[in-house]
Length: 399
Image (spheres, rainbow, N blue to C red):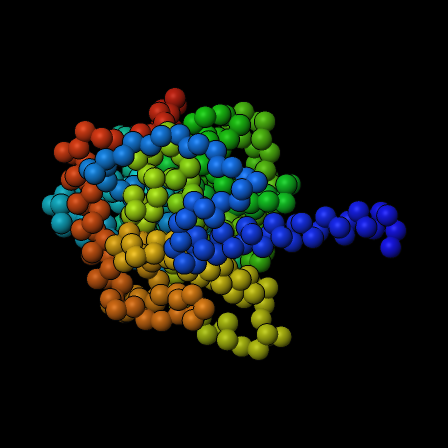
């Protein structure tokens, strides 16, 4: 073996050892809920973490995550949740955005998050869930990151001059979001996922993008024939060649949790999963077409299978990370409808039916969201400290 070849091979022994040690830590931490600081590699001393505000009354950061599975199921679930919130608080004008601190959405889920969490001229959410669904129903039967997302639908709703979302959002940008939002895409220019974030947009113009273009980017599904979206930040410095968020991050729940736990400025009390209340919305059951012979599957079918598999892996990993708090702090809604028992992903075991229907889960979630909402009125410790936006709301209206 030449010296050059040996130079490549020999370090791999140490790399294999290092990889094994890293995997052992991750396995113990996330698969078995183990949290022993002795597992830290001696060669990698931990950096002292900045102090967090800790209080018995600090409450929970409320996170909403919406998969790239289309607006049909997620929209119905959010409509049920919003109706339950309004009924329990006795306020007919209450919106989903009033009860969550962060929204993450991929693909069509990103569009729905943008519609619900963008600020209108009156300082309130641009749309309630019911209003958003009526808008989408009026202008298109379905907006989904799936085989139904064909040429022409997105062109009319998103990309074409004078399209629906251009009229809806006007000149609104990420800074005009009422709450932190995370909307992913895949950047062909860098060959890596890119997450549009209000927090980053507030910090620098180079990360602020028009909301209409953000929606177009996360919905640009090449498997459905959509072209990449060429876009620039508001200052023109950052360029992105984006395709759909479903390719990069079908289920954005893990990204949302990571954002909260590493954003100490806006979420000073969030020290771990015990300080979170996460509601993750998946999709309906897979269509029968995905069960046909592999040779008959279309590119769109394969993309959907891959996305759903990725979503289940994220669901399983997040559920294990929550450990014993999974039942109280992490709620995953997916399946067939409000009256049907929900579907849960089980590590190494596939899926199983949950004990409760999706509707029952949503009603319980509404009660927890309201409890946290009321707790904050009595607490002197801020759970969320949003970075202020320096720009006024610039969204338009469309009906």
